[in-house]
Every structure is written in C-alpha cells, then in structure tokens.
Length: 373
Image (cartoon, rainbow, N blue to C red):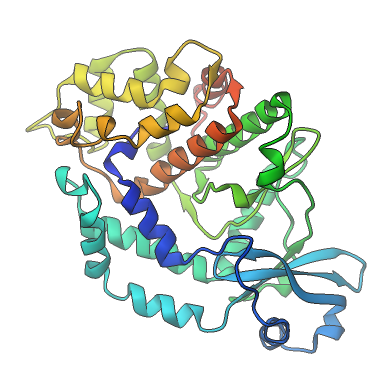
C-alpha cells in the first residue's frame, strides 16, 4: 500500500524500462558455455579450478543482462555465479547517453504529458537505475544490505553473497532452491496466501523500516518454499528513501484510509506533489487514491484479483479518465518512480496468486510512531 501515483505512469513507461534493459526470461538463448567461463575467469583474475571444485557453465537461470551458472567452492558451498554478457555495458551506455532521447520515449506514454511532471527528470531517474543494474558490485552491496536486515527471518530469505568473488560483471552468491513462479501459481490457495503476505511484508517493511525498495518486483525474482517462505533474488535495481520521504508515504496512505481529505491534501502539498497555486479538489484527490489503495481501504480481508490489477492501469483511472482534473494538478516526483513500479509489480504478482489477506492490519504494523527511522 503506497501512494497511488501509478495512474500517471503509463504501461508504455513500464515497457520502456523493460525494453531498455532487454530483460532476459528463463528461456533466453544461453551464452556459449566457454564464453561464460572465460568472462568469469577474466573477471575473477585466475583459473576457475583454483576457485571452484565444480563449475557448470550451462546456466540454471537467465538474469538481467546475463545468465547464472551453478558452481561449488573448495569449502563445499554451492553457489550461483551471475555472469554479465560481454559488451552489455558499452551497448547500454551508448543507448542511455542522451537522456532527452529517453524523455522523448517517455512522452509517448499516455498520460505523462497530461501531468505537470519533469519528463527529463523521470528519464534521468530511469537512466540512473539502469546504470546501477550494469554494476554487479553495486548489486552485491545492495544484496548484502538486505541480507543483513533479514538474516534469521523465518520467511524472508536473501541469499548471502561471496564478496571476494564479486566484481562489476560477476556476482557470486549462495545457491538457493525453491519453486519457480510457474509452479507456485498452481500451489494450494492457503500457500499462495502465505506467499502473498510475505511478498507484501517485504515490500512495505523494506520501505518503512529500511528506507529501501527492491524496485524490480517481477515473478522471476522469487523462489517459493513449502513452509510459506520466499527467497528474493536480483537486487540490481534498489532505491533508497529518506525518513521524511517514507513518512510522507505512510501519512498519505493513513489519511486516505481515514478518509481525511484535508490532511491528505496538506501532506501531499508539503511534499511538493500538489500545487498550492492550482490545487486539486481535496475530495476528488481522496476518491482517486481510495480506488487505487483499495487493498487497504476496502473491507478486510481483501483478495487481489486480475480484475483489480487491470483497473490500476485502466484508462478509467488514467489522466484521461474520471479523475483527469485531479491528476492534471499533481506533480510526479522522479524519485518516486520506484514506489510506482513496486506497487504495480506487487499488485500484478498478488493478483496472479489471488492472495487474500488483512493487508490494512499488516500496513498498520509498519506505520506506527517512529516506524520511519
């Protein structure tokens, strides 16, 4: 449950991010086995047999911009070795060098030209996140921060990295096993509800307690376990938020749940999301956000459905729809792109799981006094 800015961010915008990254799915064509080993050897600076007792260059999974073989260290630990395709960094840097070019793509998205948003700033934010995804050392640092925060958690699992075997183009971590998304979708509803709660707690808890969002919530980044736990993979796209920014999200959602349109307007005005000179109608602003935040506003427990997920990106809730007068008077802050992506992505996953939960009670756990620290 996060500030509902997603109606301003078009599906085309989401698609652009995916297209620029050229995200690879499980059936992506593999890098030739010898090439994967060569890249790893060059990056790690010594022959692989000195590091691994076993290294199978045939990938167990595809990754953003590369693929993931399995290996075994001399100390007996099984690891996954994420290896970036050669030439990826140069290709992406040349594509992203001109942020105005990205901005022109963003303007094609329905709606972004209908709100007072700095499209160039959005493009730069997008570029910055993609540049970060290229650097596996930065990803390793992100993963270590999440692993430290959740170490020992009964249901949220983050694979530990092997820092001495992480470089800009190679990321080595403990090997995790679990059900992939295609299997998880056919599990019992009881298990899917438990997984849904874990995914929800990870998103809301990471933002409110850590000031961090893992901003790529797509199903290929999860492994599901029979005890209701979930392993989280891929920390290449992480956004950090200040306590003040987190408090804005928490307070705005609480005001929406409480139907306090005056307070909601005041919170968003102080954060710079609404213009003091030309403010939206507070009642209309509240009504729009109550529709978007239905999982915590509606009668509890609430079931996420594909129909609800479709509504969030429907023309009806978009800048050209029923709330056009409200949306046209809002400003999209570029740094909140990750909040939008997580809300949309999480909603899509929970809808596929048809997860039922007391989402508002969970949200309230993370919105108490001092929760944003």
